[in-house]
Length: 218
Image 1: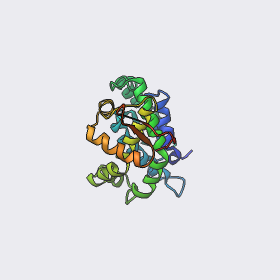
Image 2: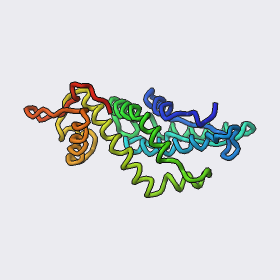
Image 3: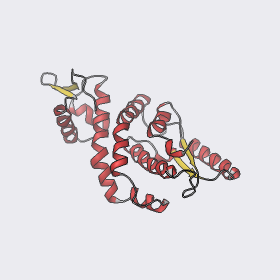
Image 4: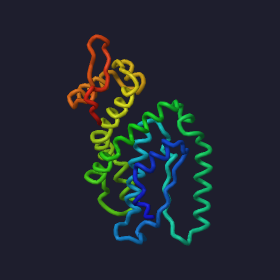
Protein backbone atom coordinates (compact mmCIF):
# COMPACT_ATOMS: atom_id res chain seq x y z
CA UNK A 1 0.00 0.00 0.00
CA UNK A 2 1.25 3.49 -0.82
CA UNK A 3 2.27 5.45 2.28
CA UNK A 4 0.17 8.31 0.92
CA UNK A 5 -2.90 6.28 1.86
CA UNK A 6 -1.98 6.38 5.55
CA UNK A 7 -4.82 8.68 6.50
CA UNK A 8 -4.85 11.01 9.51
CA UNK A 9 -7.64 8.84 10.91
CA UNK A 10 -5.38 5.76 10.89
CA UNK A 11 -2.73 7.53 12.93
CA UNK A 12 -5.00 9.00 15.59
CA UNK A 13 -7.06 5.82 15.79
CA UNK A 14 -3.89 3.92 16.62
CA UNK A 15 -3.11 6.33 19.45
CA UNK A 16 -6.73 6.20 20.65
CA UNK A 17 -6.45 2.39 20.77
CA UNK A 18 -3.49 2.72 23.14
CA UNK A 19 -0.52 2.35 20.79
CA UNK A 20 2.50 4.10 22.28
CA UNK A 21 4.01 4.94 18.89
CA UNK A 22 3.28 4.93 15.16
CA UNK A 23 5.94 4.46 12.49
CA UNK A 24 5.11 5.15 8.84
CA UNK A 25 7.31 3.54 6.21
CA UNK A 26 7.37 4.76 2.62
CA UNK A 27 9.44 4.37 -0.51
CA UNK A 28 12.31 6.80 -1.02
CA UNK A 29 11.30 10.32 -1.88
CA UNK A 30 11.43 11.00 -5.64
CA UNK A 31 11.50 7.23 -6.28
CA UNK A 32 7.77 6.60 -5.89
CA UNK A 33 6.24 3.84 -8.02
CA UNK A 34 3.20 6.05 -8.65
CA UNK A 35 2.92 9.38 -10.42
CA UNK A 36 1.14 10.79 -7.36
CA UNK A 37 4.30 10.61 -5.20
CA UNK A 38 2.08 9.77 -2.24
CA UNK A 39 5.06 9.55 0.10
CA UNK A 40 5.13 13.35 0.12
CA UNK A 41 1.48 13.33 1.22
CA UNK A 42 2.50 11.01 4.06
CA UNK A 43 5.30 13.42 4.98
CA UNK A 44 2.90 16.37 5.03
CA UNK A 45 0.39 14.45 7.15
CA UNK A 46 3.18 13.61 9.59
CA UNK A 47 3.98 17.29 10.10
CA UNK A 48 0.28 18.04 10.60
CA UNK A 49 -0.16 15.19 13.09
CA UNK A 50 2.89 16.22 15.11
CA UNK A 51 1.58 19.78 15.34
CA UNK A 52 -1.77 18.55 16.64
CA UNK A 53 -0.10 16.15 19.06
CA UNK A 54 1.79 19.04 20.64
CA UNK A 55 -1.48 20.93 21.07
CA UNK A 56 -3.08 18.15 23.09
CA UNK A 57 0.04 17.46 25.14
CA UNK A 58 1.36 14.33 23.40
CA UNK A 59 5.05 13.96 22.63
CA UNK A 60 5.33 14.27 18.81
CA UNK A 61 8.28 11.85 18.86
CA UNK A 62 5.69 9.09 19.22
CA UNK A 63 5.11 9.48 15.48
CA UNK A 64 7.87 8.70 13.01
CA UNK A 65 8.27 8.40 9.26
CA UNK A 66 11.10 6.80 7.28
CA UNK A 67 11.72 6.37 3.55
CA UNK A 68 13.56 3.38 2.09
CA UNK A 69 13.55 0.93 -0.80
CA UNK A 70 12.55 -2.70 -0.91
CA UNK A 71 16.24 -3.65 -0.82
CA UNK A 72 16.91 -1.88 2.47
CA UNK A 73 16.19 -4.86 4.69
CA UNK A 74 19.01 -4.15 7.12
CA UNK A 75 18.05 -0.50 7.36
CA UNK A 76 14.41 -1.42 7.95
CA UNK A 77 15.41 -3.61 10.90
CA UNK A 78 17.59 -0.82 12.27
CA UNK A 79 14.85 1.81 11.88
CA UNK A 80 12.23 -0.37 13.57
CA UNK A 81 14.56 -1.29 16.43
CA UNK A 82 15.58 2.33 16.98
CA UNK A 83 11.99 3.58 16.90
CA UNK A 84 10.85 0.82 19.24
CA UNK A 85 13.64 1.73 21.65
CA UNK A 86 12.69 5.41 21.51
CA UNK A 87 9.03 4.68 22.22
CA UNK A 88 9.96 2.46 25.18
CA UNK A 89 12.06 5.31 26.58
CA UNK A 90 9.11 7.70 26.16
CA UNK A 91 6.92 5.36 28.21
CA UNK A 92 3.20 4.58 27.99
CA UNK A 93 1.18 7.06 25.96
CA UNK A 94 -0.53 9.68 28.09
CA UNK A 95 0.85 8.43 31.38
CA UNK A 96 4.37 9.55 30.47
CA UNK A 97 3.03 13.00 29.53
CA UNK A 98 0.99 13.29 32.72
CA UNK A 99 -2.34 13.02 30.91
CA UNK A 100 -5.15 11.02 32.49
CA UNK A 101 -6.47 8.18 30.37
CA UNK A 102 -9.99 9.64 30.14
CA UNK A 103 -8.58 13.06 29.18
CA UNK A 104 -6.42 11.56 26.46
CA UNK A 105 -9.34 9.58 25.07
CA UNK A 106 -11.52 12.66 25.07
CA UNK A 107 -8.92 14.80 23.28
CA UNK A 108 -8.16 12.13 20.69
CA UNK A 109 -11.89 11.75 20.03
CA UNK A 110 -12.05 15.52 19.54
CA UNK A 111 -9.20 15.36 17.02
CA UNK A 112 -10.80 12.50 15.12
CA UNK A 113 -14.06 14.44 14.87
CA UNK A 114 -12.11 17.15 13.04
CA UNK A 115 -10.40 14.87 10.51
CA UNK A 116 -12.74 15.61 7.56
CA UNK A 117 -12.05 19.31 8.12
CA UNK A 118 -8.30 18.67 8.49
CA UNK A 119 -8.25 16.84 5.14
CA UNK A 120 -9.91 19.83 3.49
CA UNK A 121 -7.48 22.34 5.04
CA UNK A 122 -4.50 20.19 4.06
CA UNK A 123 -5.67 19.97 0.48
CA UNK A 124 -6.46 23.68 0.13
CA UNK A 125 -3.91 25.44 2.36
CA UNK A 126 -1.19 23.14 3.68
CA UNK A 127 0.61 21.92 0.58
CA UNK A 128 4.34 22.65 0.31
CA UNK A 129 5.33 24.61 -2.85
CA UNK A 130 7.82 21.97 -4.03
CA UNK A 131 8.29 18.20 -3.79
CA UNK A 132 11.46 17.90 -1.76
CA UNK A 133 12.16 16.94 1.84
CA UNK A 134 13.81 20.30 2.46
CA UNK A 135 10.88 22.21 0.99
CA UNK A 136 8.43 20.32 3.21
CA UNK A 137 10.53 20.94 6.32
CA UNK A 138 10.92 24.65 5.59
CA UNK A 139 7.22 24.99 4.75
CA UNK A 140 5.80 23.24 7.81
CA UNK A 141 8.25 24.81 10.28
CA UNK A 142 7.88 28.36 8.95
CA UNK A 143 6.29 31.05 11.09
CA UNK A 144 3.77 31.80 8.37
CA UNK A 145 2.46 28.23 8.30
CA UNK A 146 2.39 28.05 12.10
CA UNK A 147 0.25 31.19 12.10
CA UNK A 148 -1.96 29.70 9.38
CA UNK A 149 -2.25 26.52 11.44
CA UNK A 150 -3.37 28.57 14.46
CA UNK A 151 -5.96 30.42 12.40
CA UNK A 152 -7.40 27.46 10.50
CA UNK A 153 -7.00 24.56 12.93
CA UNK A 154 -6.15 25.82 16.42
CA UNK A 155 -9.56 27.35 17.12
CA UNK A 156 -11.49 24.44 15.60
CA UNK A 157 -9.50 21.99 17.71
CA UNK A 158 -10.21 23.97 20.88
CA UNK A 159 -13.94 24.04 20.14
CA UNK A 160 -13.94 20.31 19.41
CA UNK A 161 -12.17 19.65 22.74
CA UNK A 162 -14.70 21.80 24.60
CA UNK A 163 -17.63 20.04 22.93
CA UNK A 164 -16.11 16.69 23.99
CA UNK A 165 -15.98 17.97 27.57
CA UNK A 166 -19.61 19.07 27.48
CA UNK A 167 -20.76 15.66 26.28
CA UNK A 168 -20.10 14.49 29.85
CA UNK A 169 -21.68 17.32 31.86
CA UNK A 170 -22.44 21.06 31.80
CA UNK A 171 -19.44 23.18 32.77
CA UNK A 172 -18.69 26.79 33.69
CA UNK A 173 -16.17 28.99 31.92
CA UNK A 174 -13.75 28.57 34.83
CA UNK A 175 -14.06 24.79 34.85
CA UNK A 176 -13.43 24.57 31.11
CA UNK A 177 -10.43 26.90 31.33
CA UNK A 178 -8.87 24.81 34.14
CA UNK A 179 -9.48 21.49 32.41
CA UNK A 180 -8.00 22.63 29.09
CA UNK A 181 -5.40 25.07 30.40
CA UNK A 182 -6.95 28.04 28.59
CA UNK A 183 -7.54 31.63 29.62
CA UNK A 184 -11.17 32.27 30.60
CA UNK A 185 -11.35 35.00 27.95
CA UNK A 186 -10.34 32.49 25.28
CA UNK A 187 -12.99 30.04 26.49
CA UNK A 188 -15.62 32.79 26.36
CA UNK A 189 -14.60 33.70 22.81
CA UNK A 190 -14.97 30.12 21.62
CA UNK A 191 -18.25 29.64 23.52
CA UNK A 192 -19.76 32.74 21.97
CA UNK A 193 -18.80 31.46 18.54
CA UNK A 194 -20.09 27.96 19.30
CA UNK A 195 -23.36 29.38 20.61
CA UNK A 196 -23.92 31.27 17.35
CA UNK A 197 -23.31 28.01 15.45
CA UNK A 198 -25.89 26.22 17.59
CA UNK A 199 -23.37 23.89 19.23
CA UNK A 200 -23.74 24.98 22.85
CA UNK A 201 -26.23 26.74 25.10
CA UNK A 202 -25.66 28.81 28.25
CA UNK A 203 -27.85 28.38 31.32
CA UNK A 204 -28.02 31.70 33.18
CA UNK A 205 -29.18 30.09 36.45
CA UNK A 206 -26.39 27.52 36.77
CA UNK A 207 -23.94 29.72 34.83
CA UNK A 208 -22.81 26.70 32.86
CA UNK A 209 -22.54 25.73 29.23
CA UNK A 210 -24.02 22.54 27.84
CA UNK A 211 -24.47 20.99 24.43
CA UNK A 212 -27.37 22.51 22.54
CA UNK A 213 -30.53 20.38 22.51
CA UNK A 214 -30.46 20.42 18.72
CA UNK A 215 -27.39 18.21 18.93
CA UNK A 216 -25.20 20.52 16.86
CA UNK A 217 -21.86 19.12 15.76
CA UNK A 218 -18.44 20.69 15.22
